[in-house]
Length: 382
Figure 1 (cartoon, rainbow, N blue to C red):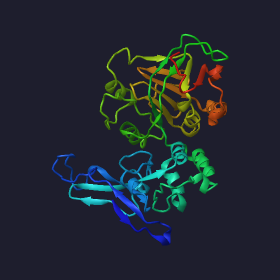
Figure 2: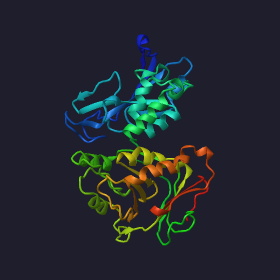
Figure 3: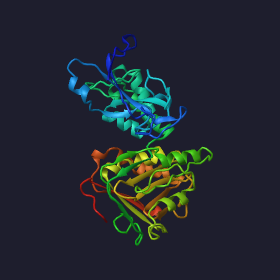
Figure 4: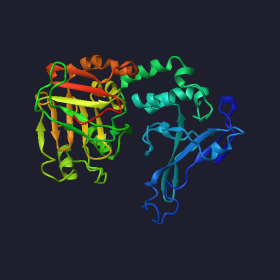
């Protein structure tokens, strides 16, 4: 921890500057990190930094800062992929044990974190940088800040909404706490009440972004003008960067039971979400599928997953004639281009969850699809 005088002329207040120690390789002898050369990442390739506004009576907070953190330039702690994820004062450093970047963590309010989830981290950080009361050019966290960026700048919400419309969302999915089942023994009725469809059981949703398997797909996608769907790998298997086809990676790294890997087409589908995860459906369709991308709900307790995909996503098991396909514990749901806007319009009530009367079922009989939203404490296996 270092005392930084800031820069009053630029509106940067005096603050404490925290710098982590040990994510990079400090020894070069293999005791903590694998030995790498001077041109390779040192250890994890980065150290974390954090800037906290200095206050005379905040000693205990200085010792143990408690903030909602947003990694500058990204929404998770990871090897930095964007230049704006770097600390404003600490440049990349080449050491005898490899290269080290300094990635800054920023304290944000709940509303700002939600905006970053629904749009992207860099866009939200750009707004925070231009507001001296929300961080300023050096993104200094103020533990006593009482106003969000949306309150400090009335145009910020429009900027976020416009960003989602133009750029889509960088949030590629969420992890959830339980499991889901699916069946197509009966059709989806007009009221959505009959029918064996499926049930997605979920606990608190946590974010997932571009992890190793998605990064590998992005690399493949750089040679493919259409988005590529990354495999949903078993949590018991290590993450790799192998660049093989979707089906080969799934079959090789998922549970080996033949029955689980059976591919099955569903004639109809009925999904049930708890409210916490259900409110993400408009984002999944508006911010992801409409922009030709995919969105995944994945269990943290097992390997089950539901992926909603756009028609332009390649490497899937679904097509227009078979929009609902199960492959082992992985359910894929295709939303055709001519269905996207209709779903956005019908799911609009989820943007105001406090006004919903639960349970609430949305039905598209011609698509043989139904989605039910229930209260977080009322979800059950159907």
